Length: 80
Image (cartoon, rainbow, N blue to C red; front, side, top):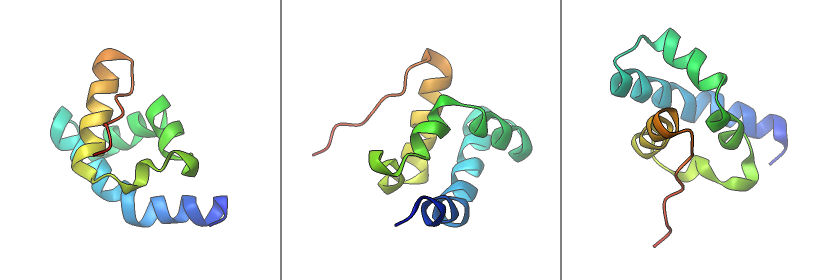
């Protein structure tokens, strides 16, 4: 998958659900959730296809984002 294809994949399939999850978790508007996500280090990691964060559910990604917002560190779940 090229970088452009991956960014399109994120924008269509992952980000809408993730933004809604972040808004719900942090009790903020989707517009604010979108802005906070795009400005975050977490988004930089999510946008890096090599890290494969896209395979986590929006709920898991929302939890990771929320933790990163609170602690400044991105928690990476252990693989089973």
